[in-house]
Image (cartoon, rainbow, N blue to C red):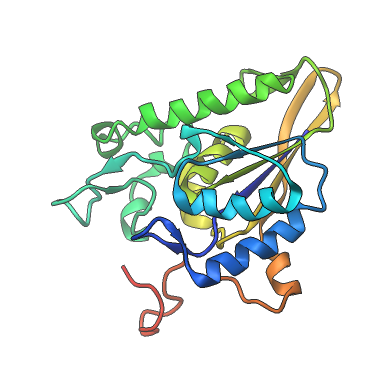
Length: 243
């Protein structure tokens, strides 16, 4: 089977919707998704994801199932450099994250005091549990670090969600620390990530990414990807996002 993850379009976070650019991006990704043979659609309950999905659903005359666990990853922490207020747990300064070897290991990244104080494990395991429950409905049951194939198929499902939770899903499917994904990869607005199963021995499947953060639909239309999710390429680029 194939899982396609679509990040929402360029966001207006204040209103939890899309900017004018975001709506344009959503219409362009709809053109791309509409060419696929999609069995089912799933979407985050947040407005920016719902709005992005609406363009595809309207074009294809389809509906989607709203899943609370696809909302942006909600765990909050006191980041080392901002000790006076809670922050999202997946946005660290490199000079702080790289000091802790545990963040590079899938089995230990949640064990630091910062993550424990923020109940990050509870949120992470909830998302992973719900993802596995969804895959079970399509015939793939988690068994250790791979999936037992109960009902092999070539179905495609599409998830409209957010960068943070996208990395949690990939972390679980690929068995790697999400800290590496959150800080080493960037999925631009309406970017498309595709993950396929590989069943090299009958009944045993693993997931493999064959496309991450693709914005081909934007380039084909002559549009540059939005800068959202990135930080300034050089610190003196004052017109780019700073932290």
